[in-house]
Length: 487
Image (cartoon, rainbow, N blue to C red; front, top):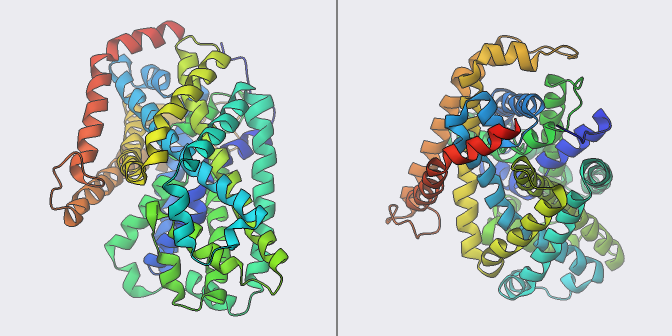
């Protein structure tokens, strides 16, 4: 029996928004926009928000509220016990991401401390600064620190932990971004960056890769299909609206991305002495080039005051740390809720997940190539997770799901027939297109695409996915029966 609930819609919205708003909104979004034609990218990005992210977020809200279970239990109750393995895969993908995302969160916290102390600006070579930090033992210590913070929040429960902390962190994140926004747009030449950011170009709009990248960004940065929103939705009150909340999350997340994009483009175009687009497009180690190498250099040019520059740099890394922590908290909660569904008490489950989260994150903390491999495998795996959620809805009966679960009594907004067509056809087709593109395109940069031990290729993805799926298929009946007892 569900015993914990979010106390208000505000608490639910901010907590769920904390899932969606992560480091990808701040460092990945701007880089992908720069690489895909600026304003041209924003058009398909908004379209896919409507036909991928929002429908999947609606589905996750409905699954969580209806079943009151994490992904495994949700799949058993809707798709049937034969498909418990699909729910297990969804849960595992987000948990596997948690292992290395905690390391990334640790990087953000480290740079916050370095910025506050001024140590970040002692050196003029920020690439060397990054390499020295990432190649030592410090990432392990900050990874541990991040896991302890996130697990402490989960240990305290839904109301005193998740809701209370997200109300503070997400609200402060928005305030910090607004402060940075005001400063960024008042920089000289900032308007050039904003113009590029919002001006579409036809040649990019007819390029299929721009559309696929827009779909990818939606799949990765809204939290749709991760199982995280599903997990938080288990704590929704019975009369909470599904469609309205889902729309607020989707559009709220993308608004944060736009705000961060304006900040980044304004700052880089105003302060970069080199090619601004090249600076923003810089990938760097583990896609961190813009955040940990370029921006620290630019922050020291924001004004003639060293103290003021440190303040703005610290605000940026504080925002980044808050964004990372709120997402990490949701990943830990998904893993903990899964154990709770199997009969564990919250405090015991939290200690177990904290311990194994730290241990299994150490390889990513020690080896950047291992982290990149895991990010590739499970990041692309999220698309498969989204497809599985679509399958669960369709297996239950898409129209039945819409009428009986989404459009339940007490809703503020009812979802129309369009949901049927999107979940039945469009989401599965998009998932197949996206998976095929990412996996097949990886063969172009790796001649040994079949090798399961390479960093980013078709072979390593298929090998790790199949290994996990086969294990879950073998134990499917056992985990389904265990969950079924509790449903």
